[in-house]
Image (cartoon, rainbow, N blue to C red; front, side):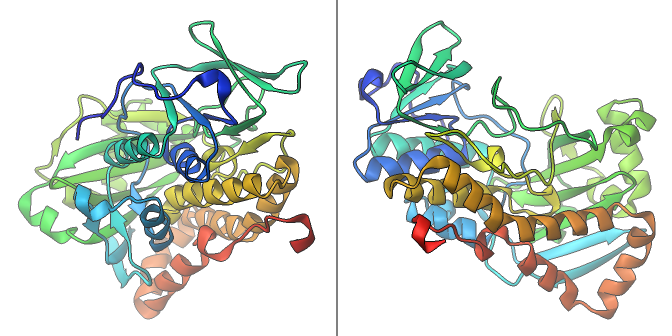
Length: 390
């Protein structure tokens, strides 16, 4: 799908907006649509000129599908792939269980394109190909975003939705584990493509884990994370790391036998503070998506959290719940499932756990379904929109 607009296709005067949204990914677009439909004058600023592929497992849980449907996004119309099973592979063995909720898979490039188009249709003023250098308060109690071309945008309220990219002065803490993430699309051999036709597979190896699942167009997405100290053993090179992963996880080697890589080089990113939840914020600054919380990737809940936090923050703003109170409530609501997800992720990185986990799963297949339910952060949390309700 081609991107529907260029940066100069604007509909509103940017100097007359109620809400300024920084970041045009899932969270930023979702918030902009929700606010514009309620009559707010919204300006959205996105650093990329057109949507592109991003580091993301591209798993859409049942909660994410519900939120997208409410926004007017029918993922099936864009070729999404239903995901019915989850498989775990470790120590040369694999176990499978059905997902306890509906799920699907769709590339972020396609999803972001559809969300930007829906935002424009809702009346959002969209500026693409512009990055924000600084965000500060003015003497008139407005937020001022200074862009890369030197121009400024001001508004009384800002939604910070810059995803994995931190904004100067509003950065999240350093990542103590120094995680590095890679993503590559493959066209699998026909037999292997048929094996993962409706499955999301999680594969374990020393220092990290990876996931492979089908996306639209007969393509498979391999997304993996590893601690930098383990990556150094492979010389910090993708090619050697990919070889090392396949040696440590024969199941992945089987999947990639005869596969054709579809990108010239993998997409990569570092500094991923897994487990982070923003505890507080400034007045008039609502933080959503990865700027609010970063859940371990293996849960597949990243897109769901982006949509959930956008929905909650939009409702809080419309009900005049101050941003600091909202952020604190969101932090409290997300913490239990975030801690559970961290505990599970730590277990996956334990060498003994990796060795015995496939056996345990065969003895008790339901454990995968239980874990999937318990780590559905968005499904289990709500944020009261009025102080008296909390």
